[in-house]
Length: 268
Image (cartoon, rainbow, N blue to C red; front, side, top):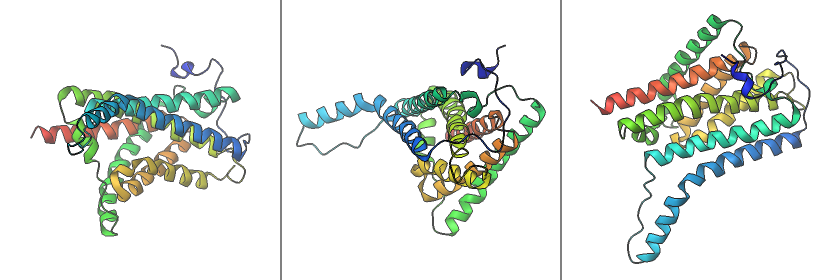
């Protein structure tokens, strides 16, 4: 079986080091905005037919009250998957141009599989603990508990949608895609910036805060708790020498567990 990292480059991955060759803040901002822009645009594209249909329906019935948008489970899942693909593609292009794909996105087979699985288990259990304690803490301080009901309601729509969300979203878009983008691309970029090179603590905090922002649909509490999860995943990534498999497995496992529990609860 080929090394999974071979999809990115044929060159051997260099050893992970604490201080990397620098990039400018201007380059970072350009890269960050282009990846975020691609992510956002791709999330809208699958919904364009539904948006056009809604606009045409409203134009044909101007006296009718505006209908609430009902995107449906398959459409929302497709936007999440498309976003992950687009974001990773643009990130790959930037890294490919610099010749640093495998230096940033480390997907080589781990040298110590037992250690990797151990860190993955710690990430899974730690994330569940963070959400459990975080829900209580954010509620206590008035931020509100994380509310992922919007997504979980879509997951439980049908057996087919449950399978689509677990495979397409939990495992691919979230588990693989978000870890490649945040703990791979983003952390590598931050580690190269003037003022942040060699400051792993600052890099961990910044990437964690940026990781929490897209989870605004869960409320302020959800953003805060997700940022704490990002901090844990960043720490695990560093302890694994930059290799991403432990955090990929942990992220995919947590989302799969949450979706499975929601589906089981919907079945009674």
